Image: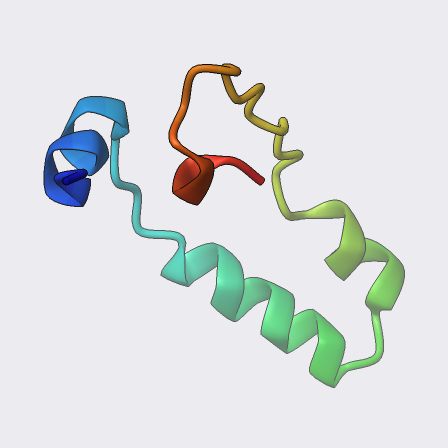
Amino acid sequence: MINHADIFLEWTVAFRDVSPLANGIHALVRTDDLAVARALPPREQPYSAAKGLPSALRP
């Protein structure tokens, strides 16, 4: 059986509070400054899943 907690702990690199960023984006959206709001979130890179991962962990 897969222990998801172990996988989570092994793969987790860091936690970061993004509340200030989310609040800033929300304020921009409320004032209809959508272009600036869209530019603020960080770009996320897709994780390249290894072929050997269990199917429950693959996209």
